[in-house]
Length: 259
Image (cartoon, rainbow, N blue to C red; front, top):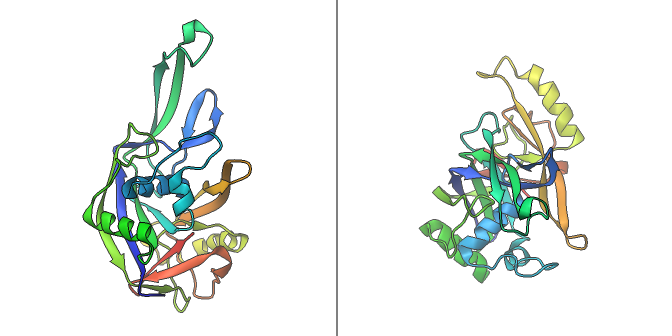
């Protein structure tokens, strides 16, 4: 790791959130439960002052300049990774929504209640944009108001930390604090660990799965996806996680995945 590399985390919170799924179920716009990378890039793009969507068929400035960043995400104050949700109905009466009923359309939308996530960023402060981002996060400053997927749901952050870090080596049994990529080996091991370590656990083992966007197919202009896991399962030091991506140890203890 170079002296310019900084790994920081901050706790991102909002009263409500909406990370729209591209599909609709029974007339309801659904939300992802977990914050995902394209949304987080939009949030940090707002902090640093990069532009959003301007033209059809063109990716926003924040995505073009920040898509290379390695990030990590962990849910906070959740029910084993899940956040409470509700559905709101409202009228779209702009006249452009529907040719029926005089252009009035009733929209039903699912939303998250009090979502909160610990966000990890690996930054190179030798790059100007990343240096500005690093400084603004530490100072709790933003060029544009960040929001949780929808500009109705303004967001804030707290508990900024800078971490010492190194590439993870499995020399002990461990837990993974963040969401992490699901591989076949990971799935099989979690099932085994439920019996292996259940007697040692003070609370039942849980496993949360969600298929999340990780970026965009830049030709088709649609999400690329990966399957993720969040769990309190203990992993044996014999479990090789290298096939699942880049894992790091923070402050000589906590293990996370950056992707």
